[in-house]
Image 1 (cartoon, rainbow, N blue to C red):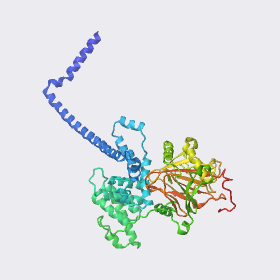
Image 2: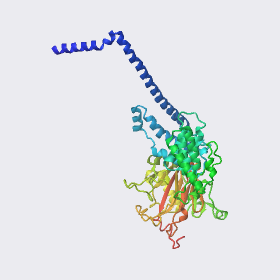
Image 3: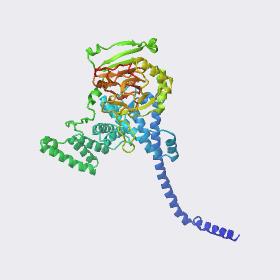
Image 4: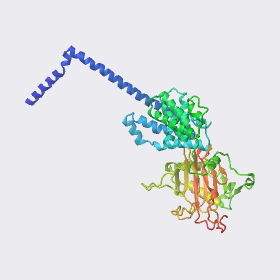
Amino acid sequence: MLLVHIFYLVLVKSIFVHSESFTSTTHLTHLFNTEVELSKQLQSYLKVEYERLDRIEKFLDVIKDEIRQAQGKEEIYFGNPVNAHLFIKHLTVDWYGIEEIVFDDTSKTMADNYLFPSYEDYTGSAVALMRLQDTYKLNTSEVANGEISTNYKSRKLSALECYDLGRIAYTNGDYYHTLMWMQEALDHLDKEVNNTSPSRVDILDHLAFSTSQQGNHEHALVLTKEILRIAPDHVRAGSNKIYYEDLIQKKILNGNSDSSDFKSTPTIKKMDNINIKNQRPRDYLDEREKYEQLCRQNGSSINTKRQAKLFCRYRHNNHPYLILRPAKEEQLLDEPVIYLYHDTVRDNDIQVIKDIALPRLQRAVLRRAVVQNPKTAQLEPAEYRVSKSAWLRNEDSPVIARLSRLIEAVTNLSMATAEDLQIANYGVGGHYEPHFDFARKTEKDAFSSFGAGNRMATWLTYLSDVEKGGATVFIPTGGHVKPEKGSAVFWYNLYASGEGDYNTRHAACPVLIGNKWVGNKWIHERGQEFRRRCSLDPMA
């Protein structure tokens, strides 16, 4: 009890001590300063909070607008590569910035329960846009202003979005595309009044370096001088100005440039007399130019003499499966012999195949000619094939089994040793660069796991129409096949002798507009001995 009394006395004393402020007017006056400071702190807090909420609201407006445009017509909306790129950007770099300022519960809920694209998806979609520019010779302003399609529309890109594309190219050491997209960002910046726009100095800085890397030192000097006009204390620009002037002076002394170029370097507003070079660098693919030219065509590039050999007919092979409904066969090419079969798969069956494949789709990893990660020993995604694929067995659905029986009936080849049906969906700028389906003699173990020999033939079913691009082209002989939903193409990869037919080198052109689905069936040598007899002539 004594302890309770002592505690009570201590408590009362504490209250009186801390309550002295309320009995003194002077103390209240001093406390008024506390209230003034509290007001300032709360105002500062609210300002930061309003700015935070404003950022969230602006991001919300962007994604709500996207939902409004895409909902109910997702395939059409995302069929435009600009829309697809911006969508991925919103769910990666834009969301990363918002994720940091929303409550942890919101961020955790989204991360735990919903799928988000990766940063690699974002940079990959940007590279895909540039690939489409190159393949189909699109002007940068066409892409940036949403003018690549009238059916699949996209909005205009902002200066910041153009700048971000240029930054990705810059980071990849791709100064060819950096120059184009930074210049586009500069053009858009002049027309915008936007707090989120990149600074003019940042754009000019990237533009100056990339144009110098392309050999345009006079142009780089002009841009650097403009940076210094805006920001006289810019350290890097000051150093670069001396460097570029020195380079130009040496060119003059070596007789590679007119001395007047140095004395009268124009301002950024008077650059018409500067010849700006922006040469696309050569890459590892020697046939790149021919391949891309074929992609831009509307049909095969063959002369009238070769066209005269082509024909159409109904094929039934006296097979019970085809007697009542023969295959509609059209020969598209004579070298290599390529057949197009119209109306081979019904729309309902195509939908079933897509529905089965969709949950299984993974980034395409080639079963041969792959790069192995030295640390993990895993197959790496093939950069020269951009698609997602799934493998379907006959047991997965009667529709898959029925397609296998149809292929066997039309080709008269056994499906017993054929590979499972590979379903591929090509994404933003999805493509597969020139390749052979068969293994060359240097690839001795390419298909050893199958135990069925080489890939004798290919059956390629088109499971969707494609608005623009996405053609299958045969580089050596000028073949061009436009995807047609429900149709299929067939060709032999090997001569009857077993030698590879190098005229079958082909590619899947990048998808410019639309969504491309295909089904590949690769037919192997074993089991075909009495169906396609061997020949001693190596080229027969």
